[in-house]
Length: 99
Length: 99
DNA sequence: ACTTACCGTAAGACAATACTTACCAATAAC
DNA sequence: GTTATTGGTAAGTATTGTCTTACGGTAAGT
Image (cartoon, rainbow over all chains, first blue to last red; front, side, top):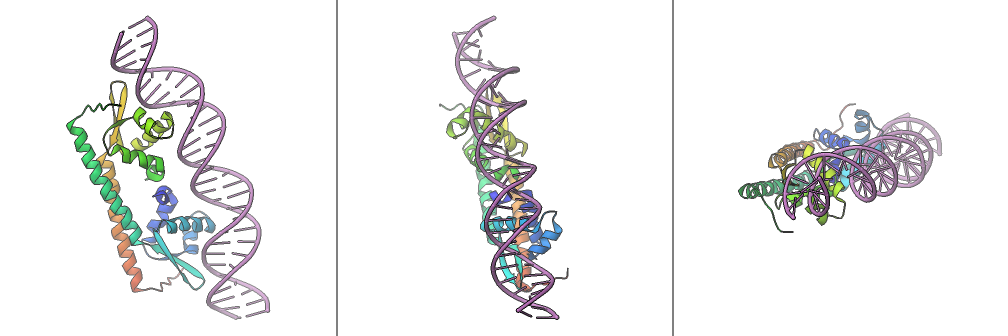
């Protein structure tokens, strides 16, 4: 969740939706240095949102569907609970619970 | 999306799932000051994740289902695309596209 | 063996963000 | 009108996070 708090990381993740990409390739497409890309990828990896594998001297990163699904499930849960909270609040509009 | 990048804001949002809560009440439950809570709520409000209304001198905040649903929809989309990207990558494992 | 290409990590500079204290406005009660 | 309660905003500090430069390490090519 914290991993998606940065706009650059979200952009990297969406770029990986097109298929596996090497680190250097990403660095060429983004306006930041290669080490910066590496650091973002490490965070995404620790969040289980991407996986990596070595291919020769290059290292390909790709999205991890399992990690994305975990987020999707969480937001499903959050949404249903938000609906319940909303309906409950609509019934008794002036909630004034005891401290 | 950036709004959920902070752990405190996520905790506040989950607290609001239980129903509308006033600012002072939140400040008592969290280990940070009331102004800090206000600032977090402002960010959540600008992200359309919560709504607020004045009740007397107090101000009640509650979750905004519409905002949550927007996130849910986005992750649905992201997940389906991640699945497609994964399957496509599985077919041709050693992708070596031209630069 | 030497060179080239690719990538991760460390350290420090820099920027963005979260937090606190102090102040002010609005409502309610008296 | 005065007082008490509630909460938003401003300014400054502190913390966190992002970026770059410098370095080392591995794999492929010659």
